[in-house]
Image (cartoon, helix red, strand yellow):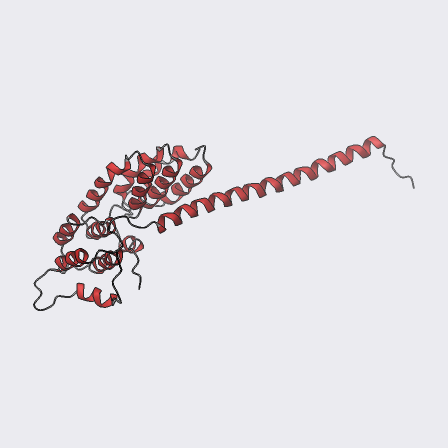
Length: 274
């Protein structure tokens, strides 16, 4: 039987083809690995940014010495109960409690009491919520008061809260703009999304990223138009987060987040530490 003969030229050609194929496979593997690493890095960056927002401390009342050996559950019950001989309304009791105890634990307890009474309009009236809001400086407490009123179908305090934030959103200090965006994100209210949207064009990338997170937390389908031009942003973090925000908002109708829910409020209550 005769065997085919191959010239050196044929052998070299076969080797070249084999090498090319091997290189092509290797390139795909390398490229895929690089892309996965890049995506992982972007996800880690966004997660770190979200975590930093959650850990940011509220900036109103100074955190003076915490109350000693407080029975937190008892305090909550006392603030939610009328006692013989105490003519104060529940709103007045909350006002006095916050005024007499200047530390963050007090704010957390007061927020929880207001939330617990959210469905009880006879115990804590809308008028008392409004009065408490207008006499407070702590942003956490004011937000919860406004959110509970929104839960009841009245967005007047939410609109007031957003309006009060407008000047800080125009601050020349990027840190101040970022702080306000983080606070607005906690509202989960679509009215805040309208105030947040202009910051998507901020010259500071960190501010732009916070604005994206805030819009994702407050917007709905109607706000996607503000994000579309960011999917091709030169900064890959902005591009990635813009696409993620679009994916989430497209599942929310134009009526979503126009009124707060109990879950929205509960998710942002300041923690009560024992």
